[in-house]
Image 1 (tube, one colour):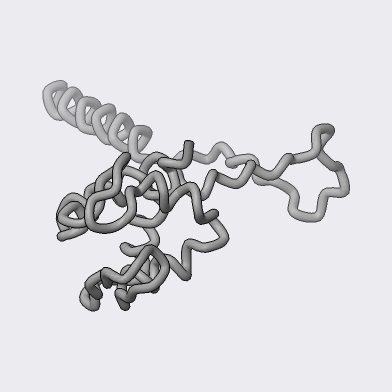
Image 2: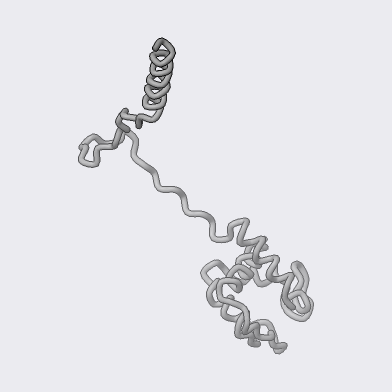
Length: 140
């Protein structure tokens, strides 16, 4: 009988340990009061707008130019067949990004002489804009 009571005691002790370990956490998690009239002591300043030609887009634009036929006619700092990228950067501003991107896609002639620039029809407008942003970043 002593062994049976001893075994029953062990079983009850183990059961109580298991039950106490499996209880869910009952401490409430603090919640913000959405109806609170208390305002923050410091106003939140909006983040400054990133520059148009961020480092990432400039690097992407350079990679796109290097992967296409652009360097056949253009150099960074001197005229080849077409104007140098620095000449283009000196002539245009960031306000011209859309127009220049479209010019890269459609090609054309007349702005820099009689030799036409070949169209790049398969180029997306976004990628052409990245290329223009790189070129404009070369402004002295």
